[in-house]
Image (cartoon, rainbow, N blue to C red):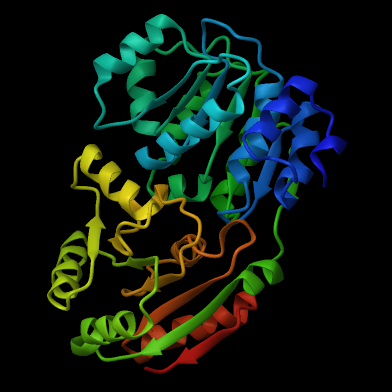
Length: 367
């Protein structure tokens, strides 16, 4: 849908066109009018479909600058908190609205100073938001919107009780928006308790995802995994590849092995400082590092366009991890490839079971 067909102010439309928004994605087209009309939302959409803008555009449209927080966005990781905050700033640049990202590992004193100056939009991880609520440094009585972004991942990380505690501290007349790549029983139960007659929106069909992302599996042996990975990268020379491993130690081992093969590579995991992670992600985003290795937790904030390959070096621990991993490629209408390394009959059976259940077409790849 063309931007002109959405009921937004001329000021908002001009700002959107200025920053490159002219045509809406599927999830934006469906969600924006509903949020503008005051509905609670459950939005199911894979990463890379413009999900953040789908809730921030109408939220910004309904804000009037204030000295007290009007919007709370809960996210699973600090990287995602920073990215959503940056997007909120861009989308509200014509209104001079103040946005703040709050997360563990960042100076709490700096966050306290920002709250004292006055904040309109707060984007944060459940742990740090809980800290501020207990300190009474974050006042929720003026909140108009509570947004849960990547709700399935927050629940997978064990944040459900904290999220419920936080949302009970917010006004009953708030508008609640929940977005998730998958809708689990936990999410359904949460929605029944805390959302008011929500509209359920599916932004992208499964066939759309399948068309954007070609999925493959590569059969290998545990002792040959790293050798086969290096061979694939040396032969194909992709400009941008994201590799997933299940442990921090394995991430570092893979990085060391690939460097010995002469490949330009770096890694991120949750033990690294925020500054180090930010520097590495910036280099990957700007294509100065063509290969990045990450754990699932650290990779939650990687929203980078034009990733050629996502490689599951270690088999994903859950179906949700698989969905989020492969969703790092094929973003915003572009195409990409996802490759899962298989090193046991059990892993192959699990992948084939997934392909049957979810109607994925997963082809065999040979080196």
